[in-house]
Image (spheres, rainbow, N blue to C red):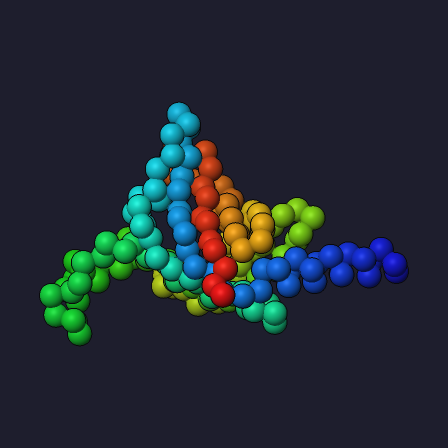
Length: 155
C-alpha cells in the first residue's frame, strides 16, 4: 500500500512538471553517420506548441515556418492542400506518463490524418526546468538514429 502511494505521488510530481504550454524550439534528427539535420518536414525553424493539462489531455500543433501563403487565402489549390500534410503535425487526445521509464504516451483522438486516430504516439521525455525534450520512439525514417523535439515552457 505504501509503495503504491509513493509511486502515485511520483507520477503526480512528473505530471505537475509536464502540465502547461510549451513552445517548439527545434526538431532535429541525428543520422547514422553522426551528423544532425533539421526535421526535413518541418525545416530549420519550425513553429508550434504542445499543451499538457492536469486532467490528462494533450494537444499539439507544429509546422514549418517556411510554408508559403496560399494564392487564394480562402481556398487552397490541390497542391497547396496536399502540402499541409507534408509539413504540419496536429493532434489532440489524452496522455499517460510513466516517469520511471521516462515515457509519455499520447493517445490520439483527433488528428490531421484520420488514419492516426486511435493510435498511440510514444515519446521518451527529459524535463529540466523550463526545457522539455521529446524523443519519438522508433521506427524512424531510414538513416535516422535519434529524433529530438525540444520545447521551452511558455510563461
